[in-house]
Length: 166
Image (cartoon, rainbow, N blue to C red; front, side):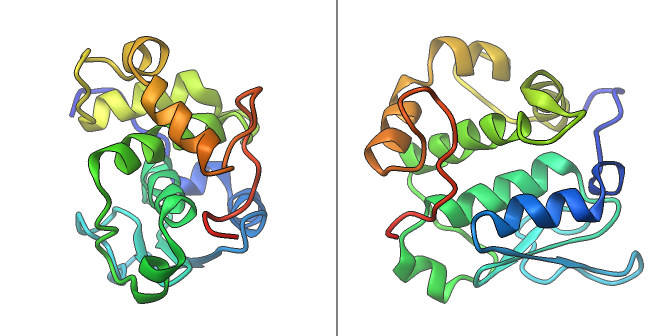
C-alpha cells in the first residue's frame, strides 16, 4: 500500500452508508473498534459479509465496504442466502463488482469515483492495465455489459438499486 491515506467508513459517516446500503435492502452492522468483523475475507479492518449484512468498523476502508456491498448486489440469490465471508465470484462478476463500486462512489457526497479509484490503487487492487482509472476507462466494457445485462445499471451508467435476481 502506498503512503496515501485511504478514506475510512467513519469519515463518510454511518447515516450516509446506511442509506446507500438500504437502497439495496442491505444492512450495515457497525462493529465496536476493538471487536472482530464477522465474515471478513481479508481480516480486520476489512468489511465482512454474512447473508445480506455488511459488517464494518470505523477504521474499515470505504472501498472495502463498497466492494462487499457490490458483491451482495451482484451475486445470485442462492449464493447470497448461503454467504459467510467468501463471495465466491467468477472473474467477470468480480470485475462487475469493482466497476459498480466505482459507480457507487459517486452516490456518496464528498467521495466520488476519482477518490475511490485512488484508494483502490493505494490498497493494491490489480488490473491488467495497472491503475484503476485506466481499467475503468479502457478495459472494463465486459464488466459494464454484465451489469447492464443483469439489470444492475442503466444505459446511462447509473446504478438501478436492486439486487441481482430481483
